[in-house]
Length: 173
Image (cartoon, rainbow, N blue to C red):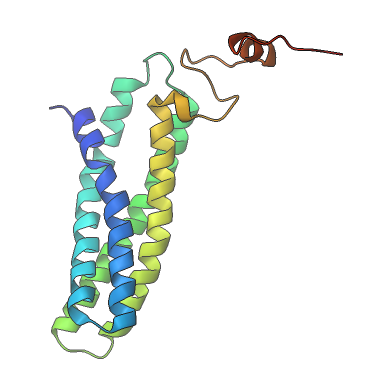
């Protein structure tokens, strides 16, 4: 297994794990269930740890796919920029979650505030992770790209080419 495979294997965990952790944390806060808040904060901390190798394997993964047909350099750059923001948000969320766990363990009153901060950060973090994943998916999954970004051969489609491909002629009248 090389770094590209590792990147593709692990990249879904921070996205889905952050969503699950955020939902659990909200549930724990609303229901005032410390054990659920602990589970959610632990999950968010683990996702912050998993996000590190995902981020670090991104550059080697880029090197292995950037010359393949249909791969958009612009999409790689969007993905890379989004990943930089997402990793920082994920690590801040993980740190807030870890602090919430520690303060809760020490029976500090400020633990509840830290759980709330971790929840808010996890929601923002999920949005950033989902955006990163969206751009990452478009690098190789040309079938989900919007019009004008490029087709499977990595070329721009004009209106005529698209209509011809669909078996329709463009009517200029």
